[in-house]
Image (cartoon, rainbow, N blue to C red; front, side, top):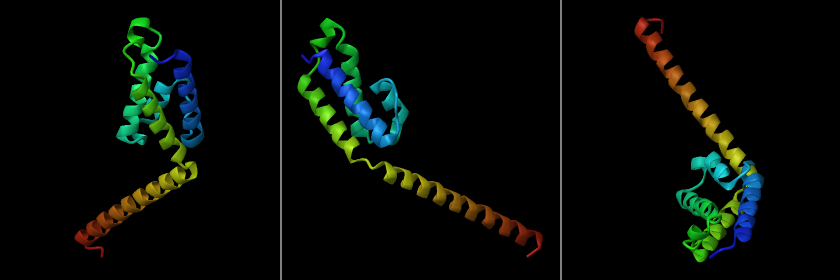
Length: 124
């Protein structure tokens, strides 16, 4: 059985890491994970879900007994290690590169369609 204070400390630590490395500053871990959504890999989302479930159950005495402390600590460690590896500037750089490549691709498609239409109409 895990203590509520230890679990809330884990939540505070993960929320701080999400704010520092991902720019997501939400009042709870569950809200932060929902905000990130698919920005995390599946395994990390599952670790976050395990911690969120534990946070919900820890306040109820009968449900608190069902919690597996080793699994919760392991999930916290894995999610913490992943969040610490994230470089915020790299994330922003990748977002700019994705947006630029999408814009270039869309521009290429529009120009191709324009040239085909002008060719079929006999202007070129």
